[in-house]
Image 1 (cartoon, rainbow, N blue to C red):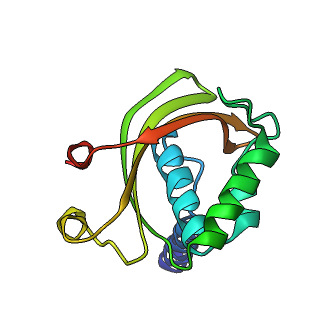
Image 2 (image 1 turned 30 degrees about the horizontal axis):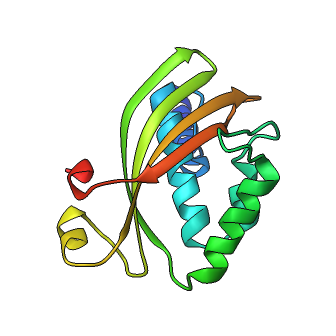
Length: 160
């Protein structure tokens, strides 16, 4: 009987672990892991051309130094998706910090291309637009959202 209970508990624990992996972000994820999953969700939303998913990652109060709000950023993103049939991204995160428990600042280097980029070596052999993004995120109701961003062209050496 004890053996059966132990097996049942182990099975339940295994199912819970699998469910947490499938949902992507468990309660035990560190803030750094949560932010990295946020960046991955952004990559996937852009590559799949899902403007609704992109919009959900941007806070209502988003504002940048060029006077753009959330609506402007979504429109800019939609225009980029419309102009580029295929979008593949390779990202590198740098300078991740947490000024407060619910606030993150980071730099993300992004290579944007029309072909799949599996790693840095393949990037060397193709044409890509390289950007440096300075991002500020806030965590509300358990989810990270973008509240501020600035970007500029990056250099190839920023990726290595």
